[in-house]
Structures are given as C-alpha cells and as structure tokens.
View 1: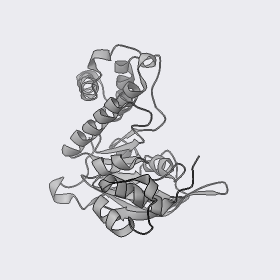
View 2 (view 1 turned 90 degrees about the horizontal axis):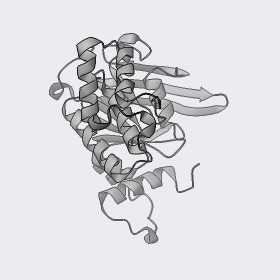
View 3 (view 1 turned 90 degrees about the vertical axis):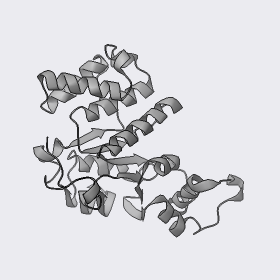
View 4 (view 1 turned 135 degrees about the vertical axis):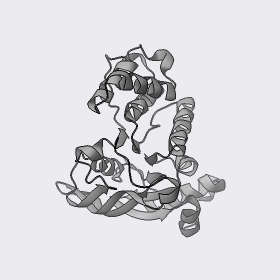
Length: 270
C-alpha cells in the first residue's frame, strides 16, 4: 500500500495534501477562488463553511473527481489525485452516500474493497475489520436499504476505510444522523487519527470542529477567510463584531460560532 513519506511524529508539519492557487469555475460561477492550503501529516483538518461555500467542490478535486480550472493539487510523493498510486492512498466518505441499497453491508464494503485491488483473505479481513470498527458487525448481512440514516453514514465510513487509506476525506459525515451515531463517528475518526491517519473533515457545525480538529480553515464563496487552531481563530476573529445579546452564547464552541458568523455573515443560505 502506498504510504506518505516520514513517520507521523517526526513529520507532522509536512504537507500530505497540497493545494496551490486552486480555482474551479462552473460556467459563470467561481466556486473555488485561488485556494492555497497545506494539509499536514497526522492532523485532523476542519474545512468549515456555510452551504455553497465550496467545501464539497474542494473535496471532489482532492480525490480527482473534478479537475481544477487553475492551480494544482498534489499528494506527498504520489503525484496528482488523478493518478492511480495517489488515489489508492485516499479514502473518501462523500456527503451523498455512495452505497448500493440492494447489497448487504458486507457486500457493499467488499465491492469497494475489490475496486481497490483487495481479494481473498486480505479482503475478508479488511471487510470484517471495517464493519467491526463502525459497529455494524451484527447487521453485516442486512441490506443497506434496511439501515437507518446513522447506520448508512457509518457504512459509508467503513467503505472509505476498507483499503486502509493514509488520507481520509469526510464530507459532512454526520449530516442528518442521530446523536448516538454522531458520537460514534466522532470516536471512530479520533481513533483513526491516533493511528496516524490524516483526516480532512468538512462541516458547518462549529462544535464538531472544536471537538475534532487540530486546525480549521473557514471558507466562504470559494475563498479561505481564516486558518488556524480554534484558539487562534477565536483570538483573531471572535471579537471583530459584537455578538447579539439575545444569542446567549458561552464557551469556546460559542466563540468559534461567533468567529464563523463574523467572517461569513448572518444572512440565510440555501
């Protein structure tokens, strides 16, 4: 399996994923505007932004599903994400579930494992590990269409992990799930990161970013507005504008939400 250069502890500041002056245009819409960003080895990086900020477009370019209109995206030592040796090092759990309703949980994970070149005993071991890791071993033979939304999200994560990726991209992984499944996804993501897996995590929930991420970037209209740790973002941006007294917000999570609103505005997004 391809691995990124260096050890986790000794290369935390090395960039696993590099986006250099990346733009993406759809017709007359500039979805991503000159984004330069390094994702460091061994971190959980939060990509935060309101609906339509460009988060999903960035994720799709990072896995090679979309080509940038300008700029470049590279993985350390493996080239561009369109290259096979780079793609096999990436796991992705998209916001739109990539699952087959008529297949069981086990069959879904095995299908994607085969696409990554797994077979035989290794495939069986990884399917079993992945389903156990996300807490679906007891439902492995049930069809995906019988799963709850939270179970489908966890199966989506199992599919992303079956080939043991070094870089995991999670696009709104807790959208529409119950608190128990959300907690499970938090815990599984943290456990993966502790083994050395680098994670990019998109969300518009500030409490998720505070709980999960070593660093976060706040994005809007395709542009990176701020970048740093939660503490650094709060120090730099939380008090840029007075918060509405009626919001009654307290604590770091509230302050990060204030940062988010100060930078992206309070108007409603579709």
